[in-house]
Length: 384
Image (cartoon, rainbow, N blue to C red):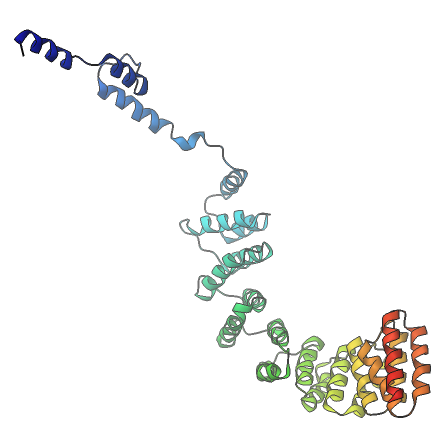
């Protein structure tokens, strides 16, 4: 290659491409500041970013503004009463929890049982159950001095959550072992009510009856005087397990505590006696209840009626059924069938048909389908 041509090519390769230069300037434009030193430019950018951070241009949310407002209201040296007042003033449980956590991190401050109790109630009412459970564990671990209302609040929350049922009894044991926070009547009422909600069938009843019996003994030993509500729950537990003698024993002790039996008391015992097969005694408690002007529940009525009918005491069963209708309660189909079929099988078919027409005229809740079902049943049984 001639020397002249080589020099021309070399000069062309060394010269920058005009198009690439323009493109680079559009993509990465040089700063238009009248500075020649790059260090001075970078120093200006860094100082501007420090003075105006990105967050300073972000609009604060209403929750953040409320939080800042309440934090500013808490004067230096604030104590638990001030925090408790601030928590109670919040309608948002999340904001209340933020205030609760922020104050706990401040120097020379510690939450007491009142602030924990307020915060737990706020979280439960706001359905923040996971956060409430966290605070409960903090209290149990010794985050603050405990009190009876705080203990009872924890037990109430645990009794309402299936997964925390056993935890409620752990807290109860801590109360038994404490010196200043012994279980109260409210404590026993919460635990007994939680146990009774699990009395679904006979096998399960016997399992939980031991716990009911143990609670009743500990309540007596601790000197806690029961009321009618608590005694009724104990009677109900014994009656559901057909331990009617134990139920009658508690019934007779009610006067010692100054408690008056009510309709629930008589109803539980009457049902237990009838289901146990002691129908005569069950009827006696029913009559005693009615003599005091107390009205049984519909389930009590129907169990007494069916038990009497199966014992072939049709007159008594009919009398109780008419009493049920007079109190604006309607028996179910099974109760009607038990009584009327029993009459037919004992050769009292005409009486059964007459009673059916009488029941139909008095029972406003008996529809045409129920009436025809009962009528067809009586015709079928009579043909047999």
